[in-house]
Image 1 (cartoon, helix red, strand yellow):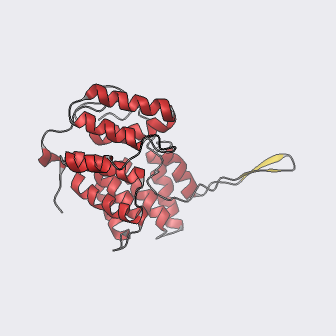
Image 2 (tube, helix red, strand yellow):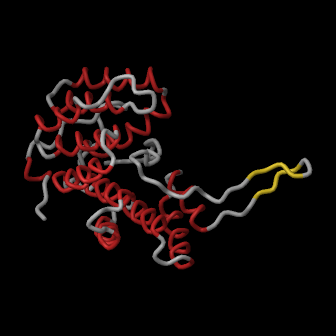
Image 3 (cartoon, helix red, strand yellow):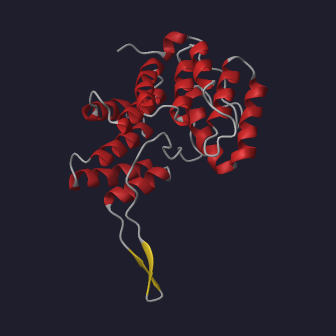
Length: 244
């Protein structure tokens, strides 16, 4: 899938907690004092800007400065995911995973597996995260995506029914509806749902969600059919699952 021109990847609103960049602007003697960015802060800004090669260089420096730091390691795994280095990213996250989480690691691992199209395995980690953070609309939406990818539409519909329209912060309800509509061949309905999300939440917020929506469902052979709607899912369920 050609990702050039796509919006910047959603800013990890799935409960993923990263430390903010050490960028401080304050007035002092009628002037602005700018504190230099740390390597971690630089990596985070480059990651959110879609400059993944630059982000990788900066996060490697941050890792040298603070080896074993959890936010640094999680951000590195997310950068590796964007670079499609799924094997190294998964190895890193599994090293950080404990029987009880942490939540941020479960979410990052779920996101990596979703992008890898290992839908059943992604659903496993999203389910664990949802137990820790019940009713979270972003995690629930990812579970909808994972179950659709695994060709389990009834389970996907069950999770979609837990989402509420007009949530003040999350267009998850409309994206879940769009994904289910697209999975059942209702292309126009899917486009209408995403257009409704644009009207309610604005272009910036909607595009962040649309980025993930397209990356999950777009065919590897060609790009999306329009700027709003992914093409149909792979019809071969065996291609969408991966055994443990």
